[in-house]
Image (tube, rainbow over all chains, first blue to last red; front, side, top):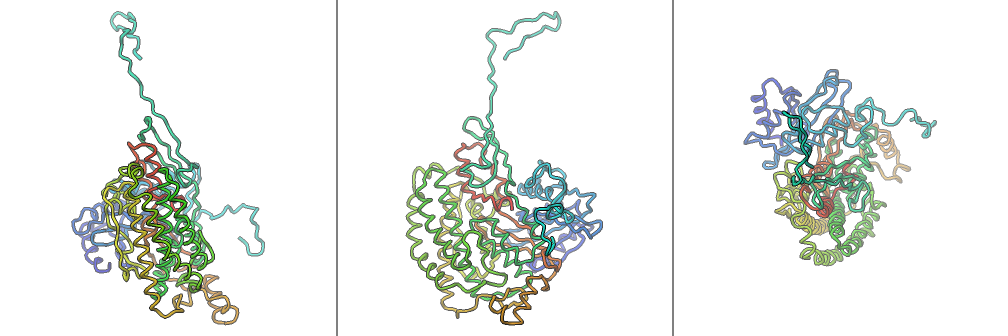
Length: 167
Length: 415
């Protein structure tokens, strides 16, 4: 997949001169970091371009880097061109306060539940999503469990006291 | 019902006309399918809006067995995540285990010996057979044919016995290690593999005789829960469900891993994407898997015996007897268990062809002892959202066979 990287980078930089934050190869994946307002436009461009044709959404998930101030939260998209067997990863980062990303359900129906899952675990709001509510966790849950500050276990538990090694 | 009409000018009320046409208000019934229903084969709920026997709409609710594996994985060292992956698609846990091992091996760029790769292929294809056997025989059960189910479960049991000989566990296998296997296949396992290879084709042929050209089965499944290739791609279908719709996408061929490029096999595809096609694609895949195992055994017989793991002491747990008798092994053991090994920083995505489709692992490592972030691309979770669209306008009994032919495994759905 390394062969495609220069072509992809050139095309994306031409089409979106101000919105590609970074471009690099990570193992076997071309990875592009995109500004969050343009991410759906980039996906649409990759979808429609006659040579690129990234028409399969492999995966969509959230990430949380609490130490990157101003870019704490992120969404990662994996796209696949099945005809030429190319894969690409798009990332977008933004701050916790403005965690609103345009929805991808307009392009891929599959994004529906993936975005609900991302909302459920990270609290990232997908603008324009038809049914944005929690999917795996209970509806009245407080907080977003995959954010780093969310404790893995309830710290007040007393039934699992392990004095020797600590918890 | 006709209402009393009031003349606006005069204010006189007139009685409703006696022969007013009675408009019948249509009433839809709401039917709860699940969360614990014998036909769903797992814990998930569907609220169906029915017009008589016809489904107008449905709303799936999932998450009943959500166990937060992605969160737990962020606090566990790499070799302790394997048991978590067992519990994703528990019908074919070895594929999940291998997928995870290969993801870590990709991150640390370990080179795996060919023999280990072929041993892995045997395990993965055996579990694919087990997975497909469950799914296909359950389609039979849900359409009223219990016999085949009981019949092929004997062979599934046989596969589980092979796993038991190799790793000691049956369902949640935790098979293999990062870098290879914990031990070589024992002779008992080889003996069981060989008996399986002898006995299995006959059993599968007989099973196919029961269902493949069975008039009742065909009438029940053809056209039930069909999806077009275009919609299936838009819904990110993968695996047998996508191939049944006519797209020949298979991770084993598209992005070969673990030496699949050395094997000769076909990708069976369907045309209509309905329940019958999904059944047939899985059925043909069982034959392909069988032939892959056969080729792998032949290849392994030509290779020198003894190698069962890669030479990566920093990541592969040394055998216990060496840990107790050898200083170096003890140090490596300690380093691995305490998470002192150097893991590269970076992001990798690795996908394997699971029983239900592309099972992906997206791993972000920050160099620490645990993954910084681990996301499972679970095929079930992604394609199950197409279920309402697939059963709309179908009968209730079609919805049941559609659900079983999609092979929605609750463990993989909820992670």
